Length: 383
Image (cartoon, rainbow, N blue to C red; front, top):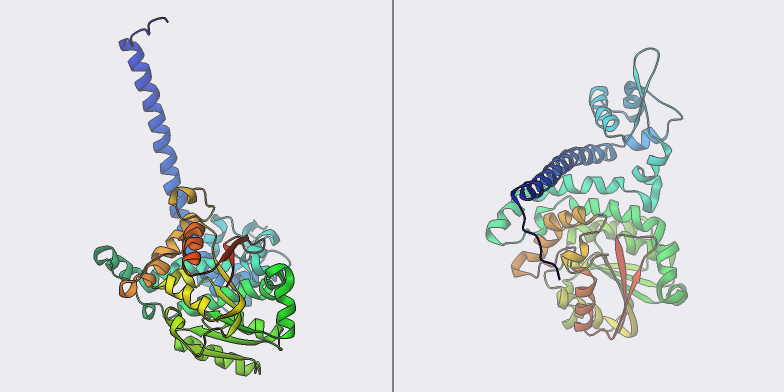
């Protein structure tokens, strides 16, 4: 074997030069990333505002470019605010800016963009999510900052308008998918036949009842019970049920973590659902034990929860990882930490979820990817 020649001074200089050039490239790349972050953060805020005040719905209804005054008039909004907002949308390449002979800018929303930004987009509607980070920042920033120092959670009372947003989000997701696609896929279609014939169903963490009411309308022979701790949400849900004249639905104020000891509800339901609800629980294992306890023999449990892994290293390539971890930081984790709770957070991951479901006593746990909902996984369990 030949000897390795020593590194001369000139060779050291060459290596340092290459390392220095690589460092400069990394510095420049990260500088550009920071510029992109600032632009994207600002754009998210403006997108959320536009979605909230209905500007995307208005823009999608035009058959060609319009002036800012025309857009403001159609939306019933102040022209000066709309013009400034359109500046964000134009520079952010959300809307197209068309120059005309009279020198006045005109704006149009490309149809390829409209499906992601309007309610007509159904399950593809990402515009609804643009409201989430600005809303959570408004509601919980001080509480979260305090939590960094104290380790304390942030109670639900600090999120008074978040349930309304979650209802809007549920409407965007469930109205198109729940009855027509998700339920027919459960248990290879066997659940659908049982729902049509008549079974007893419970939705844990039902909020304002969006999913439950849709199921109750679609399957009048079955009975539906919504369970949640937030009594104000349950009142809204019950009111909506009365307006729709649904006699096959009821709502109960219960702590899911205490259901295992609830003799009235024990073994009462043939099918139990939990839509994005378990990871927020302060005592998630007890809540899962409660879900199993209220299932009748032979019953099934559908837990719909975030599509992620438990280990951060396995989430580094997640296409929306930063967004989901931020939502968890601002809401899911702190509400789960209240009163010394588990604080699972949204990104607790499929591995921990399966482990916890098995610890709760479920004998079979099937993890199903959802073609119509890339955000979530379906954990289908049998008692």
